[in-house]
Image 1 (cartoon, rainbow, N blue to C red):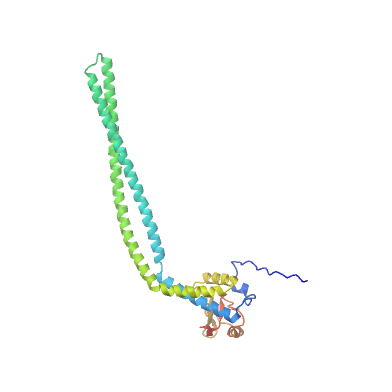
Image 2: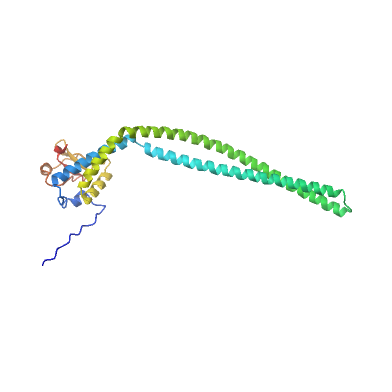
Length: 269
């Protein structure tokens, strides 16, 4: 009894082009003509989707950038507010130190009235002097902290004004984007459904090559029809007469020797 041989599918190479899969293109449930037609319809759907995305322009990116910028500014507001709060606590701590220093000074002054010798007098005056110096240091710290709070509050106002301006810009951009999306959403949904239906009919290797060629071209055209009777619709170079006959027959995949795109029968249009 003869053993059945297993067919092993070669892994898809992301560098593959239409030239690489030209020999195996016909290995499908679809005929070559049907497969070429499906690829052409797929390309047309992608082209129309590209036009819709182009209509939106840079708006999605601009909206995302504004949202990120506003998020960063809000973080900056939080950091500044936290710093102001720390400085406010620092001022309160130094005010408490001043109160304690005043209490100590009063205590030592009261003790001066009941001294018994000059040595004790000098010691108490030294303590009063030290407490006075500590009081001055605390007052200096309070003054510096107040200046820093004033600077931070001014910075906070500038940041808040910037957030207000950016928020207004974001609202306008979002409204503009929503208007465009709303106007094109039904058409885009129809095109994407059509695209998905075509993609399901195409094998993974051909789809991989299609996507690669499409992304490598400025106009995103991987499948083009014959232009003006004798030229490639992608690069506009002249096609040899024999190749024109092969294209018209719809019996095999024909690749433009100049740009690597699939060339299809203009009748598909």
